[in-house]
Each structure stands twice: as C-alpha cells, then as structure tokens.
Image (tube, rainbow, N blue to C red; front, side, top):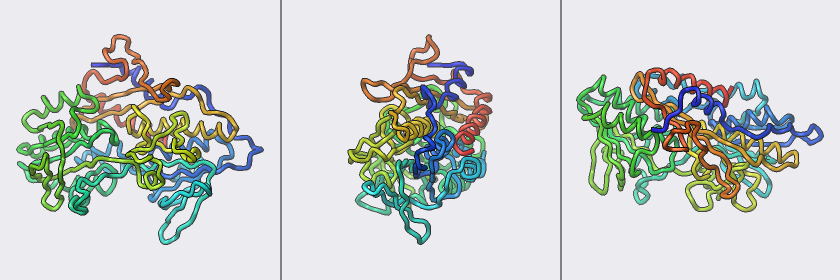
Length: 434
C-alpha cells in the first residue's frame, strides 16, 4: 500500500491549486471586464470567489438554477440516515455579500460565441448575459442505458442519487423501507465518472447500515470496470472482510437494460431483481457543454489545462471546469474542481492583463471515504503540468519508500480518519463558498 503520514496528507490537501505566483489584480485602467460562471458547484463557486478575491474590478456573475449548492461530499451518509441534506447544503449568499459576486438564479440554455453571450432562462423570462470570458461548470449529465426504449429507465423510481438533493432523499427512504432479507443492487459506471471512490463508499455505508439494521439483507455491486477504481486496498478489504457474506462485488458487469418499473437490471441480458435498485448511469459532460459543441463529439470537453479554455477552435474564451472537462488523468472530484478553478481564475486575470497563463500550475485531489459508521479511509494525488505532453501528470509521492509514486492512501481505516473527514469537508465548503 502507498501511504503518507497524516502530516504529509494534510499538507498535500492544503496545496490545492498551487500557482507559481499569484496574479496581479486587473488594472484599474481597464473597464470592469465581465466573467460569467455557469454552475455553482465546487468548480464554479470557487472560480467566482477567487476571480473577485484576486481580480480587482472584475465583474463576476454566477448562474445556477438553485439558491444553494447541495454537496455530493458526505451525501452518502445522508442515504443511510447518518447525516442530513441540511448538513451538506451551502447557500450562495456569502459569495454575494462577502465577495461581491452577482447571483442569477436561472439555467443557461444556449451560448452565442460570436456575440460572447450566454442565454439564460429564469422562470418564464429569457435573456442574454454578455461576457469577456465564460466559465462552464455544469457538472454531469447521464447516458440512458436504454436508448431504444426511452422511459424504461426512470430515475425517480430507481434513483442514482449522483446529483445530491431530491434523489438522495428518495434513495434514503427506499433503503429505510427495504425489508430485512432484501437485496440492494447498485452499479458503478464506466470510468471516467464523478467521484471515483463514491460508488464503493456508498456500497460500504449501505452494507454497514444493513449489517446493523437488517442483517439478513444483501448488497450486490455491479461494476462496469475491470476492478475497483479508487482506494483498492481499503475497499477491497471492506468487500472481502468486513462485509463478507453480505456484499457481492462483480467487476466487468455489462448492463444491457434497466427496467425501473420492475426494479430489474439486466447483466449480459440476464435479469437481476432488486428490492432497491440504485442504478448509477454512465456519464458525460453537462447539457450546456454538449449542446455548445464543446465536447468535439466525445463525452467530455477537451481543454488546455493551463487555463481550462476550450480546445475547440474559436472557443478560447470559454473555459470548462470540474466534471465536464476532459483533461486526462485528473479525477472528477469536488476537490479537483476547486483546484482547477483557481488555475482558471488565475489564467483569466492574467489574460485581462495581457499576460500568458502560469506555465507550471499544480492541482491536487483528495478525499475521505467512510467505510463503516465509525471509520474512514483517505486518498490523495497531486498533479504537475508537463510541457511536453501538455497534460497534468501525477507528481512523485512524498513518501520515498512508497511502491507507487503517484498517490497516497491511508495505511488503515480508522475512527480518527472518520472525524478528520468532517474537518476536510467543512474546509472544502468554506474555501469554495464562504
């Protein structure tokens, strides 16, 4: 196992989005330049906040359909009743009151690159916001498993809960109502997807809940990937030891159909029935990104990782952050979105000043994962820009004896890690939204 001590880990996660030098504020001689940010998750909110903190007179507008962000971080604890949605709900008011970000509650429905405008729908009203730079951080969209039979998969019946909020509560209620002796069936989408440890974390906390509350029940994890995608030591131990006899893990599971009405999922055309079916679909960039042609025909949007500007010709003033961007190697996590946002904000400020982006940014992703109701693990990985490949590459681990140079993982699950998880989460909430 590749390990770091806690001091090294805390130092690593504090270094999210390190720049070689902080940007100069935009010159007061430049009329207030306009940046519109679409999407108020960890990427969008952080970008809006840091543009205002670092940028001087930049006019920043954040557009989101909701008045608050409901974080996916810690939301698996809501599924089991160990936490609440209120605990992971962060209003946008501080971004406005403290940092001067303009807030627009609405949804971006179109982009007019030639006019440098983004079209917003708010209630029955529709209007265009002009921009000098546009940041898109809309999160993810889902790929229907039954494209030939629209409606057969219905997320209101078989919730994914991969966008925290209403779906999280639906899954929580279904789990609570599941009879002892029932089967909780969940899927792991094909990588890349939002939060690599997330599905395995959910499997663990659900198994822990059932072990304590409904011990005759079973958990079946159907993974589209050939193996566990994150924290393989911690989750492998949990699956094979802690939840042995209760949890079954099946890699390389090929989902061929999902029938929400009957709570049946088909694996290689063979039906599997569930008491609760938590189908987490394969994923792609958010609708506004796909609709604007920024994915170049793929699932995710290619970007220049020095600025997160689109690589689609003529779209250099549009930046894509977080889950929707398609830079290789970097995981789709809230912590990573926070780091990318700082690099992006820095690059935009430098552009307004007639400067090039920082040539040597670093980013970092870190997370804690609950394994039981009282214990957790953690994982961290740092990235450095490589000018030869023009990509972010994993940095050498701080532990010189580590067998794998690119990541650090907790040496064991522990109750102390569980307590530290909340400190980490609150730090993330504060840095992005407060």
